[in-house]
Length: 157
Image (cartoon, rainbow, N blue to C red):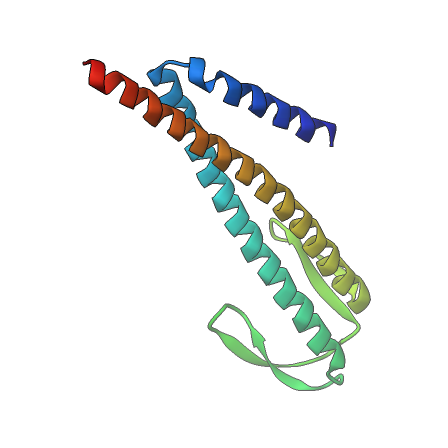
């Protein structure tokens, strides 16, 4: 928490100094802030996608736990290719923990893993939204100061 307060106070100092900056400095600050906002938006989209996938996986685990052993079903190999299969062991699942590594877990452990990851992603999402909002405010205020300075310079030239 202390680091986020420090970042906020640093931003306040920047806003107070905006009017003292030259046009080139303001343009550089604006470009940097816009770039950071775009990167944060991409990260937010990636987190939304990952959260959706984990929620789908959690729902699939729930549905799988309700099916009886020996049940015939279609098993997805890719997003569009399914093959017929039979549910052999509904108590254990393979969980993709990243970079191609799978761990065998019980159904309850698999559901718990999904829920913990979802909660972590939602927490990160909330933090990124706050940072993105501050960066967007900085970019907007820099743009206002930049436009005001350009208006001041245009009548005198």
